[in-house]
Length: 113
Length: 114
Image (cartoon, rainbow over all chains, first blue to last red; front, side):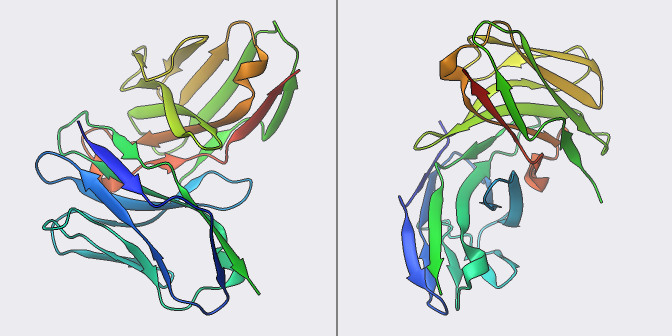
């Protein structure tokens, strides 16, 4: 079945550091891929998505590229801020009508000032 | 702005109580979902619904039930609350057949059962 594996946290970085959170997936066909972010005490928000191979999703300085050859969708940001401290979830969905989104377990990110 | 609204942010209930968690969306979405979130376990799907009066079990339905009498409202019911149901509960919705658009989540209800 479909699954998502993302790096375990917590990840701790200093402000302005480069961020990478790794995500790989297993799926049949051509899934859609997502990154969600959860700020403290909040629900999940869609951060970015990509629906086909080689697509790059981007938002708020974050980027992720859909790599079918490596089945990966790594999240990157060139210069993180304290306000980026949150939990990040990688996720995928199939293309059938009633497919559901499969979430990774989340990676907690701490940014130190 | 489109919204999924969960009725309570924080809730404290006693063991054995019947608990209702309410979720309302204003986007005319067919699909609605209930998850619980626990440290180290990520999101686990409890129940979901593709339409009014429809419900499907997710991965961990034991101890829970749901009600969907109107399209915009999806209620999660803990028939007899227990301490192991202390958790963060998240509601989400989406358009049917357009899951590639992602889910819209509510802000969550943190339930403590004492």
